[in-house]
Length: 263
Image: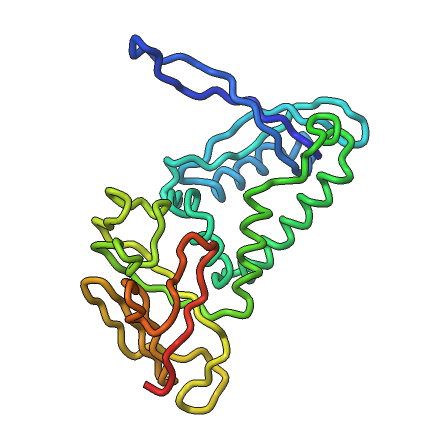
């Protein structure tokens, strides 16, 4: 279904008084009708599952089949939720990398993401209400971008590390969306993602992901050595000292770094 979300948010006026503004957005979803005798039990279970920072919103929903507007209850995550991760919201390439490899009790995160992307895309093209509301509506752009980036990692190996300090020469593989200070300084530990080709064989001759055995951190360079004898270098490359082209951090989601072999 297509739902128009109306919620109240706080804003600051010039005289520092709080005032309420209506914020309207469009999303796609499915309406579930709960029988009256099950409402209390259903809400109790939802309140428990969504505990820790979720808020309830009553929203206006436009039904696809009838065009009627009905009210529905929506659970909305907020920054007050202990699980809220600002970087995952602002740094889409990083969020895509995490979702590409994360696996939970119900399965791979990427499978959920791809199913959601297909649902939103199909709903956008088959929904008369969406077509009426927005002539160029094509689903959720962030979900589409996340899914595209996650698919680009399917033939790559991702190494997750932590780093801090200067990123002047991209030696931390971070972008501004990671929350850098002065555009190139990480004043606290940041998660770093190294993306490499998935064409290496480890030291035992297996096709398993090569295991990192050493991480090197210098003033302008960083390096990762694996048990397959592959050395990945990134950072300052003004004179070609990395042995390969610049990593071009303007290319998203992440530039693929080739290795120096048999190190």
